[in-house]
Length: 264
Image (tube, rainbow, N blue to C red; front, top):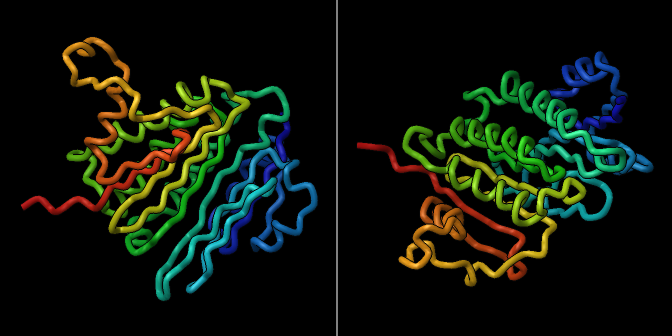
């Protein structure tokens, strides 16, 4: 099926390569260079996928982008700090019959190009990146996002993959959002935000489910719950991450992993 894809890229880091590959397989691609150009597009919600890769100017003021325009939130930027805002938004991919395999291949292609040609170690070492994904509930999509985020935090030196259980914590959070939050309903979205710098990685995972009270989860350490799986994933998250916080509704989880101390 032909899909409409919008790419907003101010330095042509991804635009030319992705336009070529997606056009070659029959998709309709539009490229703009500035956030303002994207905001000026009428009926932007008609695009199946919106890909954003933008520099955030120094001393920029925090800006939220609510509503149908699925552009990344622009964080407040300290002076002399290089921040990139990268987002893949597939919230409108649902307007036709959902094809998980098709969307998975599109997302995998985008991230593969970014990993291979953009996210070089020497480039990302001093980078502060705001990464966002807004995607339908599907475990296969979460696996691709998880793999990409692990590569990002590893390149910035936040974690040593051989000594960190960050993968476990993120996997638990993503699966919980799809399985327990959205009940595998592809008509509901999972929103993932990662703010990654050389000092820490901050993750927010939000689903569109009813939420829950984390205090009501059975204690998996209680002998009476020894053979129950309920609550073990949340326990893993608390043990692995440096900071963990749920919102009042219980459908948004914020986790922080600080840079690992060097092993002496």
